[in-house]
Image (cartoon, rainbow, N blue to C red; front, side):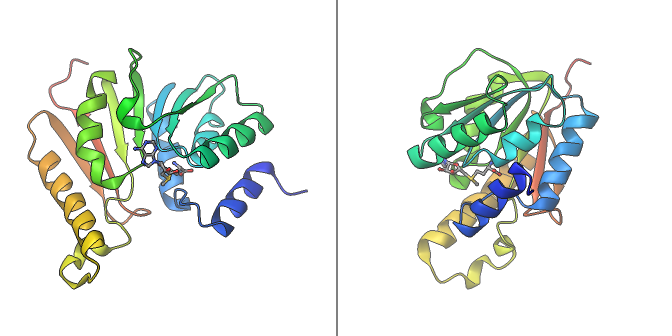
Length: 198
Ligand SMILES: C[S@@+](CC[C@H](N)C(=O)[O-])C[C@H]1O[C@@H](n2cnc3c(N)ncnc32)[C@H](O)[C@@H]1O
């Protein structure tokens, strides 16, 4: 019988729900294991695919994940319940911009509106533990950051320019150490605090 997680992935792909690519996911799960991340915040739940995968790496992991689309939210809640992970994955049905918490996280996985990455960074930086990491997906945006001038759709070009600007901004921000993995998945950017106390 097909595994529940394989079914969730297949359905998401069939329905055009954007979920993390296999390569990006493998990399993310590896980072979680290597850095022993237990408290995770995810921005952008979709149907719960990545949050279920993250939770499965270790039974001590606890995840808050945020989704504003009701249909996605309801599917995520159902998928997470079917996987019996509803005691460890908490889906918050709200726009990310309105989400506030005092919790601090080992990992913040940013996978929602690409144009808002700069805002999300400032909004959730206080929630990142001193030695925590922020993990941004879609940093090459299907390769479009390399051919921005050839994009004919104005809105798409504006979005891709925002991603490029975000990359440049964080690279030049003295508060952070940045590592970019442009050839992994859809491009991954990892951010940590510079000069943090060990
Ligand atoms: C790329 S998908 C997330 C995929 C998921 N992390 C995975 O890999 O399985 C992005 C999701 O973010 C949600 N989203 C986008 N902007 C948002 C916002 N401002 N507040 C809450 N959710 C948002 C979208 O509805 C969409 O479901």
